Length: 485
Image (cartoon, rainbow, N blue to C red; front, side, top):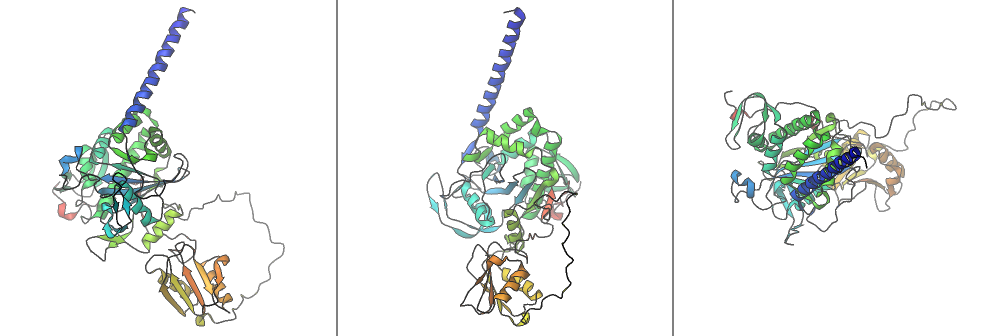
């Protein structure tokens, strides 16, 4: 073998061995960093989804535990063990990797927590009602928070990621700071957040203070805090995208190393390839299609210092999510529009103009009741109003057992009335059924018709999207904490 070939072979061998050693080192290091926990606190099996091309919902949690490295922020009496969720966001990635919704849940939101079992101790905790959502994981672990969100939204969370205080500090340091903006100079002694008016770059302790503060923004409540967190994540997303971080292996390794040291995930996500696959899915998404949303809320009836889901806005949001609606453009077509060359076939003959048929009955005299089986309080009244607008003014309403599908039932001699009632609401003909014991017509609303006045139509609360990752917004400072600049 010629000398030059021996040298070249040796160099190639060294490069290959070094490359394999480097890859092996990082794989082992990142894999050993990852902590994992069960996805649910029940007996159900985890969803089987493709990491690369299935729609995916990931529950992102920020733990307020003061154990270990987080002891400087309080004592174990404040929060220990599983801790409470200081932050709760549901990240929803579309199957085509073109859209991401990030739904924030206020920590003060009162919800029903299902029965949960601690998978480590097998201790079962009974279901509870009217409990703050941030307490869901405190007893039985992260899986109980997942089960609670599933119950609340009707979705099926595929994975979770939980980070602690240290993760925020280290990540903000690694990316070289995150730009945030506030309307006035502010100082919050509780979180130790101090910022001048305008735009600042925050990292480390100040980045953590920005995300943790409960009093610095808006009226000092949880909703102002959520908007600030969303603004921070929007800015972080823009910075990572602008600097090409997701396409730079070196930067990705540094971020992955920092994140995995402070991250707990479910078993299905507890591998380096899975985490890298999700990162790869996010790299090409248009930032204007990364939508930040807060669950619609109103002061709770049980406690005005807490929040409850505002209806029907909450049901509308969850219904749109279940239907995989583009929240930034709810009316976007779900199928491709015809090409410009395609034209409708001309009619074979001009239609003859005729007067619309007159129903052989007086709509105002027909008895129509609306049974609310949606589980959404007050839902029947919305449908009654739609029927009255359609001419059916002799209406009544009642609460009923929840059912999955909406049906229009009719008694003897009311088939034609039922068909017209269904037409007013857009309910398909196959869901119009006889009920011999019924006098008149009954619209039995199911969980497939929780919002809007037209069956199957998308109805969303106005301005449901707080901002997209492409928006640069200034947070409104809490007037009580404004200081001289």
